Length: 425
Image 1: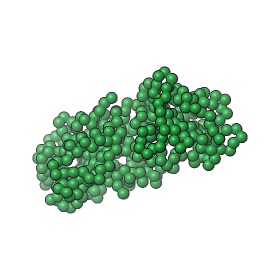
Image 2: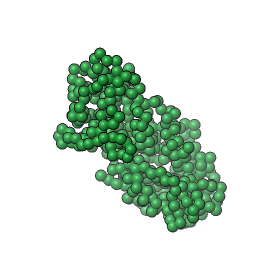
Image 3: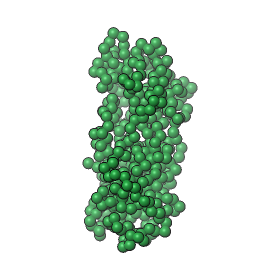
Image 4: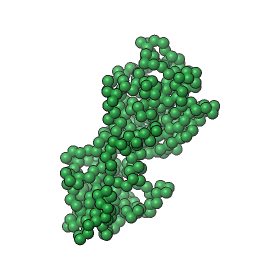
């Protein structure tokens, strides 16, 4: 098990079981896992080597006392026998940190926020919804941080990109429990919305929101969803479900909420992210990321097989690098949106790298890390651009085969500095 599957497995075993449908969880989990690769900690660029997506190989596999040298940006590598003279004129050494090897907390996304301010925000949002949907409080179960303080949140680069909660809905004389869920998101790319997705089974249509805003309505599996885009780009989603998932096995007979009711409530400007909507760059299409990467990283007689490609604000492509029909290793590249600064600072962890440098290429500063042999060996290259941090990783199929073709690292330099992967709105 490698890559995204391993990440999802690790998350599934460490995080509490959420109160959401499994299908929702899987879709949201895949996006959030990729979104927090850089946001979880400043060491996330190095983290990929540990879990298998960044275990990569330098053109000549070397031990901790050696470093590769390169003839030029795209040239043939030549090993340096002298580690003390291994730094090139355009390189600056990074002192490895001494983070404990057993400390892998940075592999997990940041825990949900639990501050008093956040809890007050979620309670205030419920009062806003009550004004629109239940002014006499005959149905909504009041939010209490100690007893029913349900909370979902997402972050990127240390910035909150989504926040929400689920509130119970009761009918007089009934034992069942329904649910009214609110989710406030930085933009459309940060939310779970399956309208238009093949096989999703959602019935969707546009709707008018107060003030001429954009609204979408979806019905699926007996659930009614509305999404309203606010003037600042924030998207508020309200969900009305007659059964409150894990909290009850008995649904209410009905909630009496129309799509118009929900749209008007979701359009309320008081439903806003604390601190305002963060600036998120336009999402990258998987096809675009793959085509640019293939053109830059692959030469004649080479191919990428078994491709997995994902688009969005955390886009990635990975597969097996074939040369002359032979499998020579794993190759992957990613573009991760820069939201805040905390998740875009590479850190050279001694437990993962033998050596790291900041290398200047065409006036751009790149992070180059040479992965420890016991962590898979190899290299990874990254650059934090104005919109996206772009990473390239390569892992040879046979590190011991010194004469086998190795991916020229100069190609990675070219891709991470390619402006086509830095879209702006």
